[in-house]
Image 1 (cartoon, rainbow over the protein chains, first blue to last red):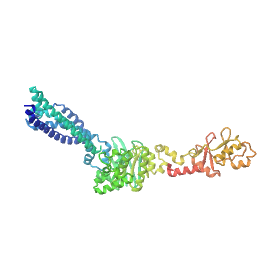
Image 2: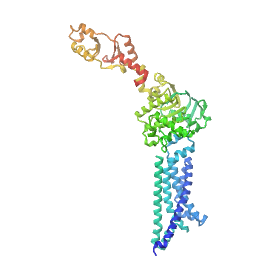
Image 3: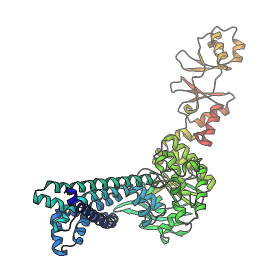
Image 4: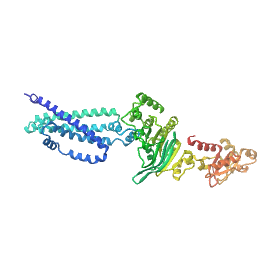
Length: 207
Length: 373
């Protein structure tokens, strides 16, 4: 029996679970971060306190955070997704805020002078111009989340981390590689896809 | 059309607008000018409520603008800024359509407007409508900036140093275009600049501001002739010596290096000079370069045979001006005398030039039509 006969099916399942974790948590994180980023950009004074706070929070190791959440939420996928979504949020939130703040003041004035309402200004001028920065944040958080999702197995919830932990525990290098390589490939492929999307959307925007 | 009543704007303790009152009539091209920080841009931006004053009233078309919804108000007032401010994520056509779209114009209507406007600045719809601003030159971008302001045919257009960032050539072309557009569309235009040449070229009325107050509000001619303060004079500096005939001296209009000969020069040589320069009168200098008078060809014919040197021929006295005399004075002397010219002398009585009727005509043309002629 080869390695693949033994583990092939399991690896494919693990890749699927891992990918779902990433997809769901990044999606949730993206929406929340976008909304928060926009709100923060409306009151830049608040951002001066909020952004450093977030930076500090970000330095808490994921292991600790998942561990704490596990105590409250129990051994459910929701624990993993909540933790990952919160971590995925940070880069997007920061980039959304920065992207919006970097929109040229003269364009904002032109938009006001043209009689755009604040909402029109946001959706027709500011957000389109912040798109490259926002997608940059999305890419970063996707890549991070792929690696953080490895921690899911720490509380026994599968994903590619399972192979890595078992591999380490049993001193089985093949298992470690079987977990690490698909995770790395997933990170690279997702990053490339997002880059491609960014380039297309940027060209369309003519920015 | 636009009326300010005792408008006050402060930032903290700094008074930016100090109870200014003025009125701009319908169809007028009003230029706000003054040194940096004089409040000209603030004044402009209070008109579309980008800045709101602390006290006083501003009426646009008879209505207090504080009663209007600012967003609605701005859709009826075109706005052009120095930084151009075209939205880089929109095409030329989309930029032009920004206001008409908000006013719910139909698609066909918007396209027609865009075509007409582009046509007015000689940019073809087919070539430019679907380009992004980054694909245009600075001059073209600002043309689109102006068109965007005109798109919903607002009765009023505000322009905040719109040509300030353009190179002088392009600026000139765009100035000419805006004059043409103003004549054609008869908009009320309020235009901010710090360039007096631009103000004099464009304005029906110049509003000169300093330290939040209006120093003088007058037409370009009136301001040139009677600047209300030294600061205004200074602003017009160069223009005054070029334009206002009153402050010009004889030196500004004389022809320098007129044909002349020393007393000791031979008659033959002198007549040759006259033949070569095709003149019938020659200025005569003493040996110390001072002016002695002039001899006419008539006198040379009469007395030339007996004379060896030109100095022996009787000289005709001419009307004389000095270089620092008013140009107007020397023109008067010219008209009073029978001669075709007035001799202009330096302070030490040496010859500087002559003022002829041609110089006078040029001076009058300048005064009447500026320096375009």
